[in-house]
Image (cartoon, rainbow, N blue to C red; front, side, top):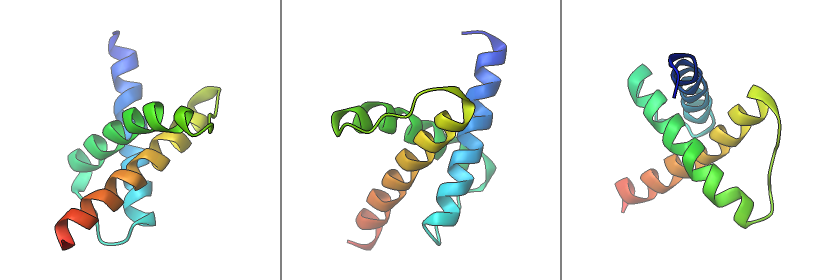
Length: 84
């Protein structure tokens, strides 16, 4: 992995985590936490979305959308465990 690819992953993770935090109210984790949630969300979406037949292909925007979907799913699951 090149340094450019790592920076792109971090930026996509930060944007996705921030957007997911806005969508799922009350789950802001700060910059580092948003990056982690976004990256985990991107991995989750990369695994889960093709299983259900939903795949966006091409470019940074599609990567951000996939990562946001995965991060929202992750935040909802975290919220279920925190409340329960």
